[in-house]
Length: 227
Image 1: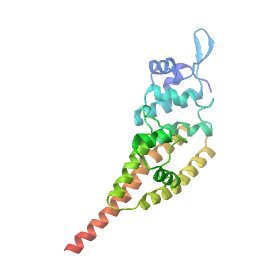
Image 2: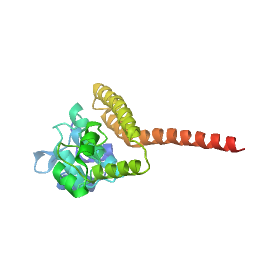
Image 3: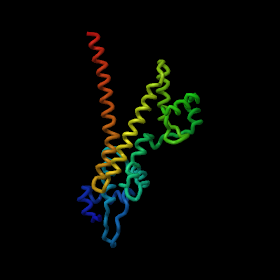
Image 4: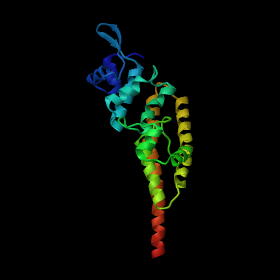
């Protein structure tokens, strides 16, 4: 469907000046020019405007971050493959200014025991985003392993974290497949909100509440024993 700028403003509730600004910034494609002063916008503009506003409001995304994401999208942002593309940079949780190391550089920089490093990689407690590409994220897990060792606790609990994380990832993948299977132009904005809000709001809420309940139960039992 095609829209005049006034219709696009009405449909998205985003001011004309903001829409034109996003076009200048490279976040939105140019409108189709019918005549020198006659432009038409598409459903893709509607989808992208919804996405841009959502990411800015809920994740504080900058224009540069959004530009990098949107430059790599398929022609239609609502295609099933590009539906999850915007999640990837966020899920990898690596800052844009992070320092990267090869394996050898990482070992040298952090004085890592290579045998231990290989075991952590095998157990997937360390899981670099790309092969031979380590960052401070991996170093922070190594520091945690040092803490475990210092108090005499084996890191089996972290291996269990990996096990359950894999199981959860399969559920999340299942959700994504189902959402892509029912996607259409009308429900797409709701579908990507489901993906984002499940992963970044519901997941920590559900997990942290269950942890709270477990800790609280332990505390209650200790109090009962002392009374």
